[in-house]
Amino acid sequence: MKSLNELKKAKIEPVYLMYGVNSFLIKEARKEIVNKTLSEEEKSFNLSTYDLEETPIEQVIEDAETLPFFGDKRVVVAHNASFLTAEKQKSKGKVEHQVEKLLQYIEHPASFTVLLIIAPYEKLDERKKITKVLKKQTTCIEANNFGEKEMKEWIVDYLFSHGIKMEEEAMTHLIQLVGLNLTLITNELDKLILYVGEGGNLTQESVSLLVAKTLEQNVFTLVEAVIKGDVSNALNMYQDLLRNNEEPIKILSILASQFRLIYHAKQLSSQGYGQQQIAQTLKVHPFRVKLAAQQSRAFSEQRLRSILKEIAQADYDMKTGKMDKALILQLFFLKQAH
Image (cartoon, rainbow, N blue to C red; front, side, top):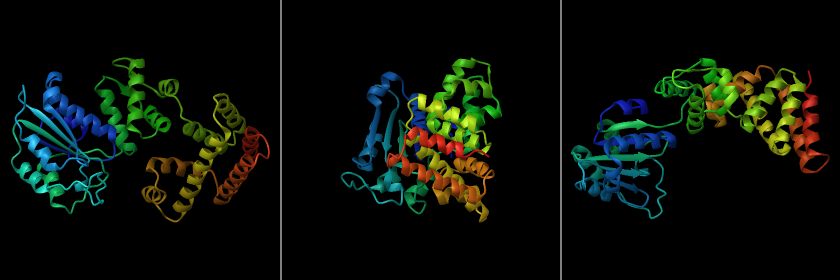
């Protein structure tokens, strides 16, 4: 199993299996392999891409066994290898794949071809012979979403390649602002790299200065203010959101979602559930559960139930036009004063 960073340092292999739901990692790994194998000119003649929902695997293998044109190597990319999963195939034309042709090819791959089999699914069916053979006899790259630890390791490696260091607090703050979306994290890191310059050190202050908060993060900060009983700060942040043309009903919806998560995290935690179990039960990312569990310590279950009732009433009042929407939410924050 190779990571993207290991892939950059390794020599090119004849067959790769890439699987996982992180499209950014798959895209980057594919780009790395293609760029290491072919020049820009050669890509026009010797790069083929197939969708296995439309093309049978035996046709892909036939292309892989065809000599390159005006070059020494060719790259053949096959997307959507659903025959590697336990899921029922949802291909448009219900393409039948002769996977034995792929098994035969793996035993004796063409020396002039790099074959990429891409399965954009979280898990593969380990019971299938083709899955076992691909995992054992090819170079396998898993591209599933990162947890907090993996994300921090990736950030360190990414910045190291640019000669830049980042403080632990700054990394934590960046993840809190952006979440664990690798595409968004990379976009923000590129911006921070330009700001600090080669050999620089990224601090929490530089992250706060340059990384824009999402509405969800602003609401998270609002909840933090409520936890601290800092209603004045909560109201100021709320007014800022209104000035930025955020709709009160949308703010309330995200607020409701966050307090529901805090309530369920507290409830399940008291029943002995760990963070991973809570995440699986609630079908949310473990990092969100970690933050919600931290916030839940400031409330009793009874208090959280009371807040959720107040949010439900505010939602009803907004939708029935009882009073001005912005004022309804303002009154909600005032009620949270300790």
